[in-house]
Length: 339
Length: 289
Image 1 (cartoon, rainbow over the protein chains, first blue to last red):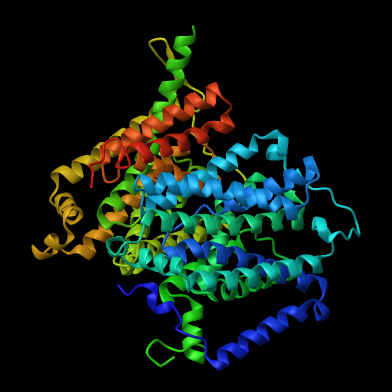
Image 2: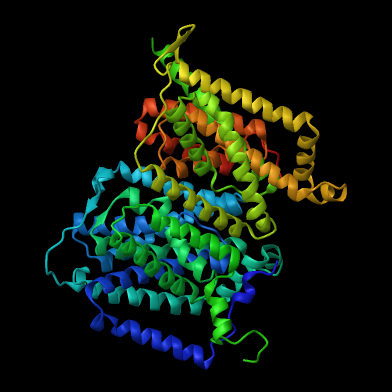
């Protein structure tokens, strides 16, 4: 079976670079030309692009299938929200603790999984189990609202970027910064010693270990990086939506939504999760719009579409849309084409 | 007398657990042979539940009699699914199989949500409020019937794998796919048959479940996870293990729901899962690989 190694573009061509820069420029000026609705859709797109990138560090780079990433989103969201509501600590300081808590949770799961040789499907199940335990647990923690939900105070017209309170445009740029930051971080990581170790562990764990890679350490760092990044997405979510319900935040469905962009765009690629989010979310929105315009009330249709997207992608483009698109449009140099 | 109380709860949990175990058996059969994790298992189970609800509503069929109908229907669906889609993924990486079945599960559960709505639906049976006295215990008639039916189906499944030629051929496939191919077995056909059998078994479990629980689409992912937990607790690939795991989870859920609050009962199953994964990853009755 040819591994995802061929998904790794060996370099972006001039045309690819130009397109990337154009896309980035378009995103920077978007709030000046787009209306409120479009900005909110784009913010959602960027959020999924970001958490997709965070998940990609585990699955795409290190081959660890996590189906419980909602856990880290939820921990990040609840920790930062609790700090803000109960102690008045703003999200910029709170996110440090939020990330720390998520990393500890990730490391506990990782430690249990890797030390006891819980692999593949079993590992994925372990991640689901922890997310579900958190969901049920948070339902009963009245300090953060329990199943009734946890709400952040909202003041109309407030503009306080230091506490991440402000207009949707502020949130849009924060989300954009997260995506760009995660892109550069992922790129730097992939080209570091650690990144090469991850790829080796993903492709051939036994061979990697034989050549001196500490499997346990490599995997644990992947979990730590991924959970910390994901928790940041949770902090954003808490302050953007101002309400948290364990049933939504920690749900299995949310975990699936998080993995979708990377799968559709291309697991293990840098651009894949971003492209995937830009494909899926607008399609989902368009579908919702069409249903409402048609005067129909079909609550499951959007999810049904996501399910169908998963099946279609995994059957016809198992390596994702981005590697295929990049090849077709000549956006990346193929391995062996000369650097 | 408190001890009778506990006995009663444990016995009801055991009977519910037998139905859980039957559902998990289907998952175990598929995983043991095709080596694909059926992530749409709970969705198939809830499809079985809705089938029984519809048959009960239209012609007043008892879920016990709907069960064979659902078995036949889901066998066909499972067979087609394996032939049409899953078979192409048998050799692919694990996460691809997972994603494929996750997609199918998402389609199924939302299709059911659109067809039947989010509200709970049930089947009326004349004996729904009857109780049966056994010694000092009072057991629900529905629970007794569901549990007994689960045992009958499980026994039939064991007998099929133990004694029939096809069953033996499927076991040969599970033990050594290459060897099975060498001696001339039609692997693809047997895989499709196995997936069909697994789906049929969970369809029956779904039909029986309508005696105990109202059908809701939201149950689907819960049952998928529950079946996983049971299979892993009992031991992957071990059929008696799946049944034992089901009984164990059923009883612990019942007791946890009684001792703590009902909303915490599934927490208990996850706790059992985590402990088993760590202390005995091959499961209670599983063989070390």
